[in-house]
Length: 172
Image (cartoon, rainbow, N blue to C red; front, side, top):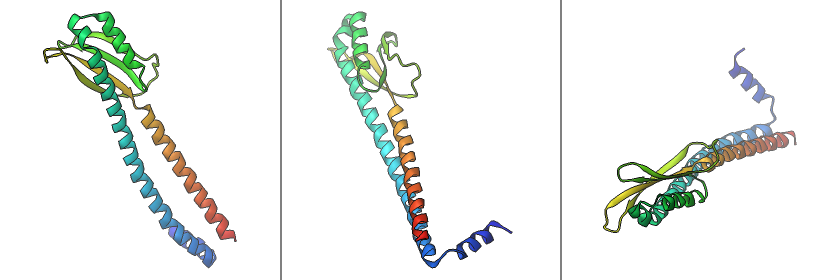
């Protein structure tokens, strides 16, 4: 006996009210899942863009503060500037490079078990308007991963509650 026959035979045993509830719930559950999938993708895309904009803002702030110390090549001041960038939320690492590519300051968070990050680079512009270096900021994408996991947990809970509701309605 194949599975199609078993499904049809199982549906024939249901009452008419149960069949109507099932007929209403299946398309509604599928439409809800499709809507949640689309909205989740948009939400996670927006959250990633927000993280990128946050990293860009931190990079521009650090680059602005690093202008004068970079012109004097004050490595101690550049190290403090890089360290101040890591105090911002979700920032994992800040590096300040010369225009030749030498790293003159580096500051990282202590968390070595961090996940993949998003890197943004901003130029350091001297008083004469020329590029004198770069600032790289790496920001954590853990918030995006946590949001993704929590959304799918909520989806499973909503579907489970819907199935329990159908089961209770079918018994009535």
